[in-house]
Length: 120
Image 1 (spheres, rainbow, N blue to C red):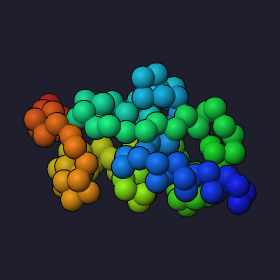
Image 2: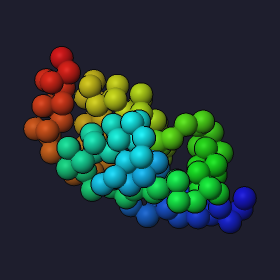
Image 3: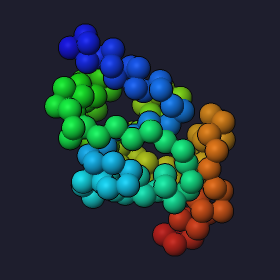
């Protein structure tokens, strides 16, 4: 598990925004991963996707690493933010925008506003 944990730590820190997901940002393999990747893609966020289906050690290891039982998992600047429900709530409340602003992560503010308008 130490090697897996080291790999996860390196991946988490390899980009400002990292999404552990089932599938890839271009081809998600579950609805929850699709929702989070879709939000990030729509907002124009440059993020690294890690396909947990391609590596069973990473798939289980990320759950142990974060002490969070589900995938997807979003990390910003090396910090765990949450899964699908949390990211959805943060997007709709504007908290995700605030986190990106605070963290210096570029995103399309108009796109973020359009998501909120469409879900109002």
